[in-house]
Structure formats: structure tokens, C-alpha cells
Length: 240
Image (cartoon, rainbow, N blue to C red):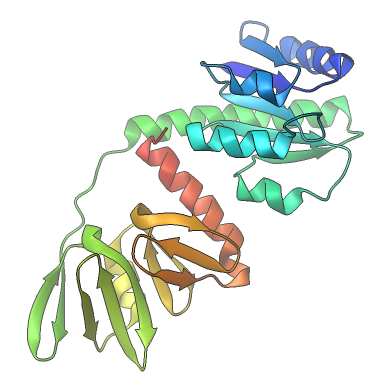
């Protein structure tokens, strides 16, 4: 297990390293004094304690760049302000430590993050690509077979379900809930009228998901669940 500490304050780096060493004396610990230095690292940490307010590239921007390289890195933000909580969620942060915090709290989060690291390794090892059965629907009196992997997204419109693939749109009378159950774990329902395939997501925010073809609405109350599930999907796929 490789644990990183990125903070522009030397005293903060040394204190965090001391606490980590007490708990995990045999693990690799690397300190970085800036986001720039961290981003030059070829062997990224498995667990990272990341200060947000730093000169140059701040912690939040650093985290975004890290996420583009590694979906699995466990990021724990450290900051003196709470203003970045929702941004932290956007980059899939594991936790958000607000200064000042006790040694007990630091140890608790460190322990939890180490357990998460072990859990992720087991997930990646255990993940076996599952073949989801084809979906058979009836559209305009004809039976049509649709492969779930070809579905970009589906939406409900005028009491019909419309399945969008990259090269066609198929309308039929049915229930989105039933399609969701058949589609498999690679899909998410961010809004009662939409079902999206993680595979085709290009970008997203708290209101809209942009796909390789079209876009889907995001219900405010589903945003956190979507981000969590999307991160888990990428972890299981082992994407870098």
C-alpha cells in the first residue's frame, strides 16, 4: 500500500507522516509539497491526503487531473474551510477532513481508507465480465432484440419508452423500471424519465449527463448516488 501526503506546509506533512507510520510502519509513504510535484509522480499513491489550499495548482484542481489518470486512487481532502464539500464529491473524494481535527479522527479515516483500498482490490480481482442477456421488446407489432451494451440511454416520452442506440431509436410501450432491471449493473437511472449507460458518458454535472449521443437529465436528489455508482463502475472496470 502506497500512501501519499500532499501539503505545502512542511509541519503538516511531517505530522501526517508520523501518524501514518505509527499505524502502518511497513507501508510506503511519499510526501509532496505541491500539486505540481504530485502530478509529476509516475507511481501514484493508493491513498492520498491532499490539502486543498495550496499555491499554484490547488488541491481541487490537482484531484481533477489525478482522476483523469486514475479512477481508483482514494483521495482524502484536508482543508480549513468547508466550501469545497460538493466539489470534493464531484471528484469522488473518500473523505473531507476539516482543520482542526484530532489525531483520533485522522487515524479513523486512515483506517477506513485502508479498508476501502483492500475492498477495491478484491472487487477488481473478483470482477468477471458478465454477459447480460439480450432484451426483447415489441415495437409496432414486431419483436426486436436489443443488446444492453448497445443502449446509450433510454427515456420516457408520451407514455412510451424510447431506447437510443448509436445508430437507431426504438419506441415501444413499456415500463422504465422493467428495462432498468434487465439492463444490468452498467446502467443508472439519474431521473425517473431517464436510464443511462455508464459506458457512453462523456461528462456530467448536477443537472445534465452528456453522452456520446444525446443527453439525460439529472434529478438533484440522485446526483450523489450517481457519482458514487459511476466511480464504482470505473473501479470495477479497472480503468486508468
